[in-house]
Length: 387
Image (cartoon, rainbow, N blue to C red; front, side):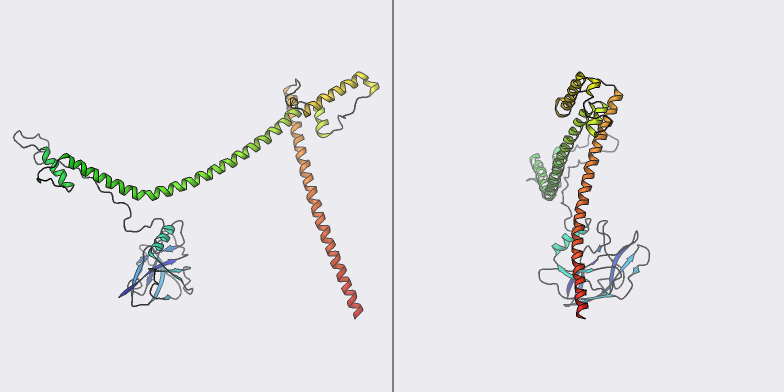
């Protein structure tokens, strides 16, 4: 009698803490409506529940399944799905495949037909590893590492808490070597004693076998980890390059702002108002000739040239007057106000430009609406004349 391998999957089933989902059915292999085949899930895969291993059901070509899902605790009665039983009919698995995968959409949706797809055992194993990291094939879960058995001395000639009797026989090196050789599965040519070379050779063979198995088991894992580390390093290098470029740009901008502040702080308060805000408190006009005279006019021109030089040359960055701390602080505050005023002016210009663009768009829309209104009025007039 042939058998069909099936695997049940439930895409969405919400459970409480401690509950598990199981599948039950009419067939003997499915428990005759007794919950016995539990599905599994993971923190990443929840609320998806899957069957880890295939379920073999006997058939003569086709098999009709009738089943349901239940939620259950370990000690309480199961909670059955509401509605009618789920039913489907399966035929032989196509060539190249080994298992029927039955995917139901949701808990309680017994009216919806499941998605049935065939797959091979390799595809089933890979999908289970992706969904349920804790599940792995039962065949050779991990490399088998042989244990190195050490020779044990013969304790028949010794007593607990006493020394050996003078007349008793002592265990010889030959008996110990013979015991070690027999434990490693080797027998000497005379079956009585073995040479130390054979014991050391046996140990080397065991060590070589263990090393080969370890290398075969962890070679693939090391390659995968190395590739992931290379990708992470490449991503980190790219991020560091971006951060370095951003830091350089910010540092350059801050240097320019600091130069502007230092250059402005070197001026007198009234001169700062004059150069930064064009305040009427300090007008940039020469003093009255009849009040100050020709010498005052020359002093004013010289002072104005010095101020312009301080504002436009590189040497003016570090040129300063011998002022008190309070005056310096006041000038720095004035310089910050100047920077804020410049930023506010730029923002105002941007807003004005945006408003101008919006006004232009509104004007174009109004033109289109006026044309449409004129066209409508003309159509109404023609209609009245026609009537």
